[in-house]
Image (tube, rainbow, N blue to C red; front, side, top):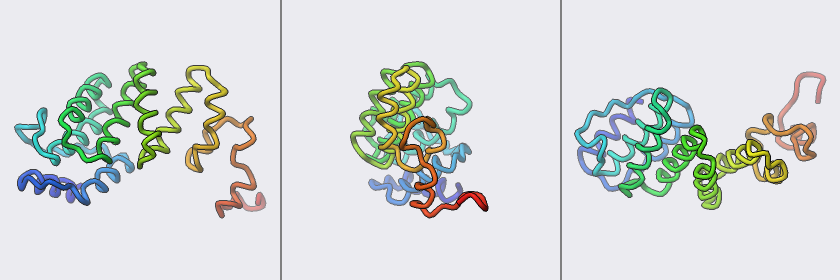
Length: 186
């Protein structure tokens, strides 16, 4: 966290154009579900004018979504997206978390559209977007679409899939991925 804070401050204070390693650090921050506030006090927090400001606001909005109403989160993420200051990978991150906020608010059409955009872009968050799309289809009662998505979802999250589907990982998949079951079970 300290390195991320320091990197953001340096990038902001020196108005660095590229974010470099801060992009990977942002993904580690969200992947690890740290949710510790970054506490970068700036006068431009609500209106970023550098890529570093936009990244700080993005990560702050994501972290605060645990404590704030999802509508506020969606608004803050929209404000960051409108600036156009984020590089492509971080724009996808903002879209992903805004779509999650829309889903939580019951705005499933908006969530579906943004997740579809991410899945079609085939970027870093595409596998997650595909899982959310399958879940949205399931929630809408569209079982054929949800089941049709199963082969595209990859290994992660396999334990949450429908048990009736023939492509659900089983004994063969464990061997294929070099994973072992409990002793005596293959």
